[in-house]
Image (tube, rainbow over all chains, first blue to last red; front, side, top):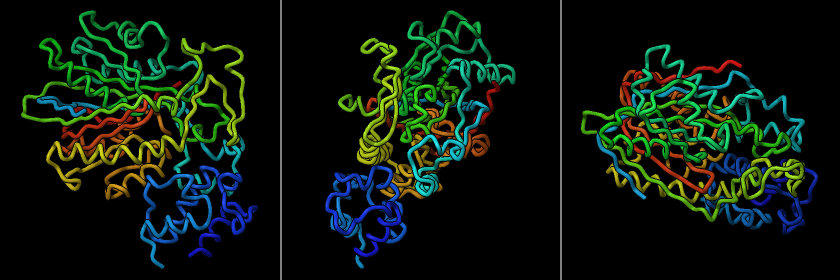
Amino acid sequence: MKEKILEILSEIRPEFDFENSTDFIGEGMLDSFDIVSLVASLDEEFGISIDGTEILPENFSDVDSIYHLLIKNGVTK
Amino acid sequence: MNLKFHKKKITGILTVLPENEVNFDDEIDNYDFSRGQSMKLKLIMGYGKRRVVKEGTTASDLCIFGLNYLFDNNFLKKDEIDAIILVTQSPDHFVPATSHIIQGKLDLKQDMVCLDINQACSGYPIGLNQAFMLLDQEEINKVVVLNADTMSYKVSHKDRGSRPLTGDAASITIVENDSSDSVIYGSVYVDGKGADALIIPAGGFRIPSTAKTAKLETDESGNSRALDHLVMKGDDVFNFVQKEVPPMVDNLLVKADKHKDDIDYYMFHQPNKFMLKKLADKMGIPYDKMPNNVVENFGNASGVSIPTAITHNIGDKLMEGTLLLFLAGFGAGLSWASLLMKMGNLDFCNTIEFKN
């Protein structure tokens, strides 16, 4: 699942190295519009709808936090 | 706060859209998006065509145009109007009230109530709530609720958060007493601690407009705007809506003893497609019961987006029969409000174009 997350992140902002960062927001790699795009892509890829109340910057700070967000929203694979 | 009204009804809804249309594709270069990002956001957010007034046109112009249409087509008579409520955040002037200007220009009777209400995206249900209350007065039999905004004047052309979504429009809703035992359920909520989430900082008495407040400044997100422009903290507003609207809906359904499936349509304020889809998903409401197509076709004109969604999507159905509707608005204030009511067999429910 983490590989897929990295693949989607790279599609949205190909200029950044998401694999070696733990602070996507603080390092300016994702802004709020990128998060919207990311959520839409994750929803489509994993067949879910991430809860709107969980679309908070802290849930998109690194690959692990996105991974846990997906698990919380019902992704099992 | 829960509200309940007996023996009131809506008898007609008219939406007035400026004929002037702006297309997102023609504005892309104004914003700090890559072309790929623009195309993706266009689909997700619903960026598309927006209706905006041309320089010099105000909210009262749109309202007067619509009211004259109703007079000319015999849907409304001037001497029947006992009250005008104008919901707007873009008045013609600070003084006097714009509803008074409309009353004067249309030569309406003096023996009437005219009120301006300063509300934005929750303004439509709030204006209707006030109309229902006025109808409890013996001498008030017909209230005209005007909801109009021309906020395109106040959104920076370099603000990618707000500009691609903002439209201008007006609506006219006729509210009357009902001889049947109809019951309308409503609710209103306020959180003034979030007042700065959607704000025009300058131009009022706190910070009067000056040359300095008109100067564009670029923020950390790359948006350039002046203190005279609308500022929206998009993240805060999004989270407020996702947190507060679903429980408001659940609460009113319980009060009305209705199930989600009993509602024919959820006609919500139209901030953007993404936010509405997330709300629908969270509440388990099918997209076809909660239209989200106003922004992409006309832009978001604050509270007017609710009557626009109604006339655009179910206008014909409301002329021919009756539907159970859930209306909800949410935005600046912060405020959020709702109505659950039967609506139908309307005298008119359509959209017209303002020519300028």
